[in-house]
Image 1 (cartoon, rainbow, N blue to C red):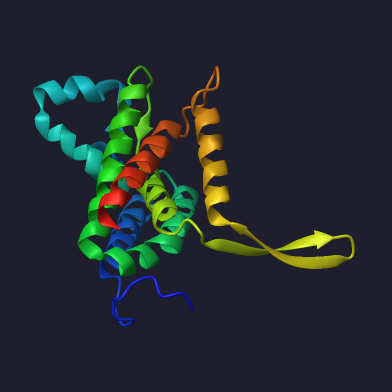
Image 2: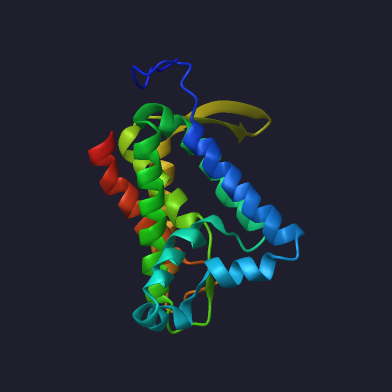
Length: 210
């Protein structure tokens, strides 16, 4: 076992668990109650209207935060929260709850800010934790650059156990995000720029909190 820090093994990542509970609460309200449309109207970002609304209603800036906790459907929620759970507990145990939450929220806010700017000519509803989770990916790359992922590779009739540095997978993921964002006719069903800017935020902040 690798000892990442001198924190007590009994440290419970309470902030990560609280964030997950909030994610779950919003999902249940949005998918299984009559309040779903109201929640979207109050907390998501309408990209075409957002920048003009800020000038007259500065409180609209709060949506940069609240949109992070909303998801368009169950699949969207599952994808983001799977990655979140894989990274968040380990990261928080190393840097503590306050630093973890700061990086997570700032990554989400900057990701949403970037996406709302790039998509302001499109009629999109911006929401999701992708920017914040991407920030955790950037943070992970700095904190654990030598961590490896184990997997089984089929070779003919045999299976060979091997491993690959997680940093390689993260960098490949980042390249895909850049390609999808800057392709000639990008799809705006997914805010790729939010992933890129969230990752960049987490990557930079990691040097101050690790």
